[in-house]
Image: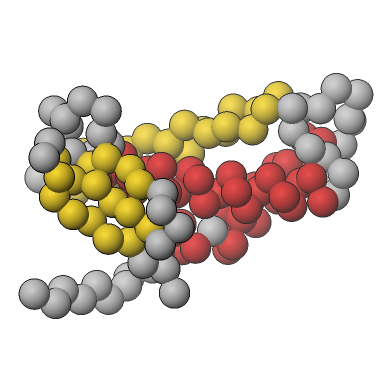
Length: 130
């Protein structure tokens, strides 16, 4: 089970998990805070990278740099268009197979193994309790 608490603060909101990590949440005008859409994009990028990294490293191909930019355009009020994940990778020096392994692993993660990506691709029930 995953759970976070989102609560109002003096200058916006914050999300806190049960391990004590927190992130500021705002409306796009709040300095030092993520918007909810930015958090969604970060969750998707983070999910892919924290899944790809150990799988490539386990196969002996630890990337020198592994990062991603995640982008979505708002196409209508309260509606995002296609989300694009662009990997920014520096391959390990002298590793001729690293690019092939990365492409295969990243493809499988994107299609099947990223929980956040799967949640975005499949209709899910979201309930509200007030």
